Length: 122
Image (cartoon, rainbow, N blue to C red; front, side, top):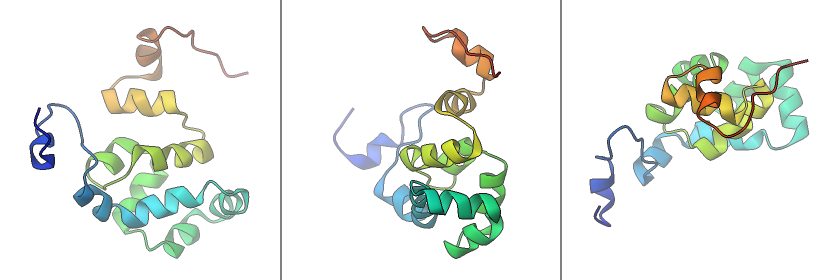
């Protein structure tokens, strides 16, 4: 692989978070980053649409956020997985669920490839 960023987009099966992707997802990533603060998480929980409007998210972005479609937000929306992890914490979709979605697997299928037993919700 070369050090030229334009060549990195050709890594099969990978979405590379480039400067272009960062610019495309700026509002989405600012929104997701804001969820690190408890008051913001409460505001999002109380009025998700209103909170997303505050950050200027498009209708497409709002739809994907509410659907917990992290794969689309990363691949098409310029979402940074590091920012979207904050969204997963608020919506109850943890990192393992996001990993499964990225790979097109169920959570159980994904966890079977890990060295960690799946904890059942109680």
